[in-house]
Image (tube, rainbow, N blue to C red):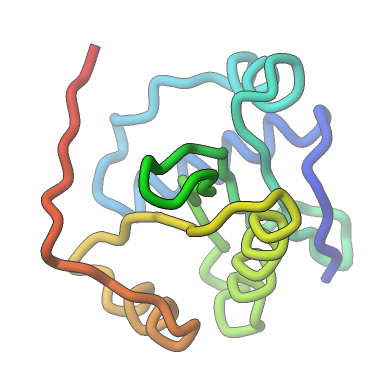
Length: 147
């Protein structure tokens, strides 16, 4: 398995994995972004960043997409928007290595905290994050407004 920063040629493969993730999360029609917009956001405007996992045949089988934010209390933060690994690679440590890459990048960039969300029914992801020593906080209520 090879882990690396995403490059522009990965946009279509990452987008395909985003769709797989939406299906897994029971929201198959929720994805409105396109590979073209992903290319712009990841590589031209650099609004977000990604690491990918490639199998021995050069196929991308997982990704971690993140961006930087700001906390008035902590300063610079990093937000893990999505971490997805195809099911047949989930027990091989691929997710952990992608997660660790984002953590390392956050530290390298001077972030003081990493945030993400996990669905309450996704027990395998919750167990994964617990093993990483994460604080899963049920005190805060997520807010969201669509435009």
